[in-house]
Length: 88
Image (cartoon, rainbow, N blue to C red; front, side, top):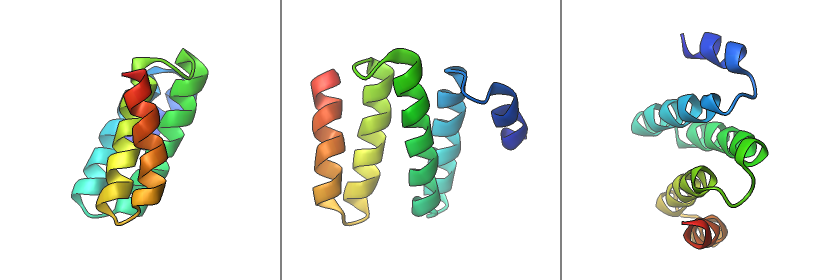
């Protein structure tokens, strides 16, 4: 069902929420690499739709940073978390 919604919405801002929910489900299943890929797609859509300094973008950045931190990539996480902090 989610891929069908994704196809209909394509680059619509509402897709950000759908993708973030999907990424959360993937993370709960320990499919972190897939979750990060989905979150990065959500980030690209959010940045296009809302601009780089919107709170929605900050939320996605924080999620990416947290997952990178939890998977042992603190250097990568830092940039995402710093940017999220600046926005929010």
